[in-house]
Image 1 (tube, rainbow, N blue to C red):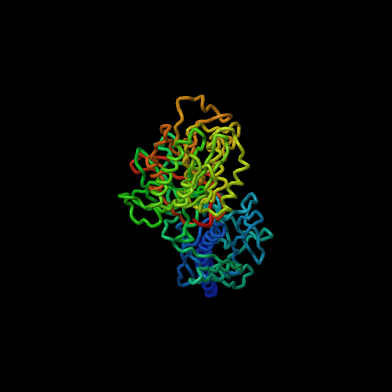
Image 2 (cartoon, one colour):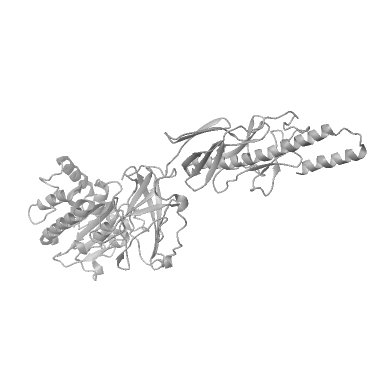
Amino acid sequence: MKLKSFFLWSLMIIGAVSCKYDDGELWNKVNDLDGRLTNIESQLTQMNTDITSMGAIVNVLEGNVYITSVTETENGYTIEFSDGKTATITNGTAGKDAPVIGFDKDTDGKYYWTQTIDGQQNWLTDENGNKIPVTGNDAVTPQLKVSTTGYWMISYDNGLTFAEVLDENGNPVKAVGEDGQDGSDGSAGTNGDSWFDNVTYDPSTGILTLIINGETIQLTVVEPTGIPTDAQAGLPPTVNDGDVTFNMPTSISALAVDPSNPKIGRFNLAGIQANGEWLELFGTGEANQNVWVEINGIQKGIKVINGEEVVTRSRAGLPVAKAKADVVFLVDNSGSMNEEANKVAEEIIRYSQKLNQNMDVKFGCVGFSEGGYINGALNITDANTLSEYLNCFTGTSRTKHYGESMANPPADRNDLETKAQPYGRTGGECGGMALHYADENFTFREGSNRFYVLFTDEPNQPRSNAPWSVLTVKQDSEHYNWDASKGVIYTVWSGNPNDPSNYQNWLYSEDPTLFSNYTGGISFETTGSFNVNLDDLPLTGAITQSFIIQFNITPDLTIGGTYDVTITICYPDGTIKSKYTYKGIQFVAAA
C-alpha cells in the first residue's frame, strides 16, 4: 500500500543519515501499522458486504421481495430472496471509529441511507444535498474504503469515485490514528467486522431476527411453494399490435388465494380458441413455455394447470376442468318468444345438466319482457335447482315468475323481486337491463369465471337509458362500467342482421350481438323457432378447456387491492401471438 511504502522510504533515509540509529522502535511501528491496515482491509470487505445486505433487507421491508430461505454459517447466516439474490449476515460489531452506515425511514415512507459518527446520525446526501434512497430507480449502494493518508472515504457510484467521509463539523474522519493506531485520537480502537449486532433464526416459526445498529427487525421467511419464483419468470416475447393473430377473451376471474396453499395466488383463464383449435398453455420453466403473466408491471413466475386436480396435459376424452365457472342465462320473455320459451328452457336444462357432470359450474337465470322490465330471476345455484325453477311455470312462458314453489328460500326470492323494482321499464326488450341486474345483484362465487348467454329475437332497446346500453361493455366508451373480471357474453338470437334500422344507436335500439363482440364472446344465429343446441356454442370449450394460473403471493400483493394483469401468449414457432391487459382485477381472500 502507498502508506506503507511511504514509511519504508522514510526508514531508508533515516538509515542513510545515521548507521548508529536504533531503528527497532520505528520498525515496530511500521509492522504494527501494516497489520492494522491489513485488518482494516478485511474489515472493509465485511462492511461493504453488510451495506449490500442492508439494502436487501430494506427491499424486504418495502415489500419488493421476500425471504425464501435462511442457512446458518459459521459466523452468521446466508439469506436467499425471492428475486434470486443472496445476502451474507455476520454477527459482530463495527469498529468504534468507523462511520456506521445504516438506514432509516423518512416522513415520505421511504428508506434512505444514514451515517453515524461519534454517536451522531445524519442522512447520507449526494453532492446536491439530496438524501440517498436505499431502493427504487434512484437507489445507490454506498461503498467504503480508506485513503492512502488514512481517512475514511465513501463512493455513491459503485466505486468509480470516492469522497472523504465528513463528521458533523465537516472534518474528515480518520481510519488510522496519527501514531499508527486506529483511533482518531491515536488511541487503540476496538475493531469489529459487522454492523449486525446479532442475528438469530427460529426455523420453527420462520422468524429471522436482526439487530442492526441497535434496532431490532423481525422478518418472516416464506418457504418455497413449488411455483417458479418471479426471478425465474424472464421477459415475454414482444407482441406488437400488428403481430396479434387472435383476440383473447376480455375477462378473467378475480385474483384469489389458492385453497391448496395460502402462499399461492391464482386466477382462472377461460379456454382460448385460435386458428380453430383450443390452446394448451405452458408456464415458467417449461421447455415449450408460451404464456407469460405480468401483475402491476412485475413479471410473475407461473404454473399453469387445467383444473385443480389434473396432473397431466392430455386433452383426450372428456376434459376434467375444476376451474370455477358461474353461468347466467338471460332470457327474452316477450310475447314474440312465448312459443319458443319452452324450447329455450328445455335446452338450458339439458345443457346445464351436461356441464355439471364434469365441471365446477353454478347457474343463474334472468327473464325480461317487452315492457322493458325484469320479470324473473334465480340467483346463482346448482343445476338441479335451475331445472326445478324452469320447470315450474304458468301459461306458456317458463321464466315469467320469481321462483314460486322453488327450493330457494322465500326471503331470497322476495329480495330479488324487490331489487328488480328500481330497474323500471324501458318500453322494449332490453337484454342490457337483465345483464346489469344479474351483475349487480347475484351472489357470484369468488374466483370464478363468469359467462352470460343472452337469448333474444329483438334488438337491445335501452330507450335512452345509457346504463343498459351495449356501450356499457365497450372498453373505450364513455358509458363503460364493465371490468375484466365481470364476464364474457354469448348471444343466441334470431333477429335480422341485415336490417340496420332495427338497431341504430343506444338512444333507441342496438345490435345485441355487440354484447359479445365487445367482451370477447361469440354470437350464434338461429331461426325464429329457437331450435338450438348449446353444445355448438364455444362456451362449452371455454369452460372445459379453461386454465388455472398459479403464482406466488409476494408482499406487493395485498388482499382487497386491485391490479392490472397483462397476459402474453406466443407459441415458440410464432404462429400464434396475442397480448391483452385486464385492468382493475381485484385480489380476493379465497377462491
